[in-house]
Image 1 (cartoon, rainbow, N blue to C red):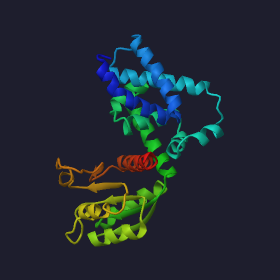
Image 2: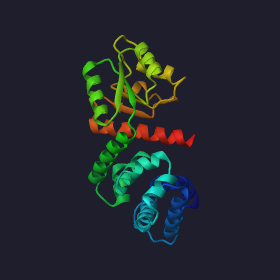
Image 3: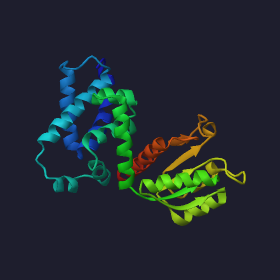
Image 4: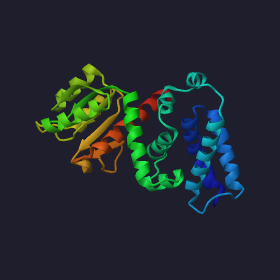
Length: 262
């Protein structure tokens, strides 16, 4: 690492990542310390420092996981629900998903960390996203005025194990649907059939109910204005089904993490 300040900036993220992989902060921190010691000893490949450090951390996590003697029943009793969901994935799929979804690596950089191809990373993330979505199955409200798009979204959500409880086509219908059903996820368009706004509906709902929202819209510029708050999850129409599946899993994954962190 070029400077100690850079290292200090990375450490909190490394600790978060290691905890998500190992299930506890104690085991995660032990891996982080070992990775940092290796880095400071100069035993790193000729790649960007952040990528090298995460690669070293994964080497530590993988080696310690292979040597672990704790039974799966004991481990599952110790970790939080979101980590139990992640534990159902294969180790490399879990690592790929978290590198991209939580640590915000590009596919190419995640491939360097994992020492596989970008195509392989993409396939792992797709599989992990589907598995996570099934494990965090929830009720969903769709705010969409185009019947064919609404049907496609409903079929996509059902394929992930979710239950669409209502499809709303106007702002008023959306507000009523969400307040009545209190879903675990909302998929929302912006421009609705009667000229009303899905964005206005969501903003009104979020004043009284905390729920993850994914905007699926042909008008992203109406959301990405540079002013706050802006949506965390945004998918442009026409959407790719696999990409939308991954975003659904990320939205639910981070919502569960937030609930257990608060």
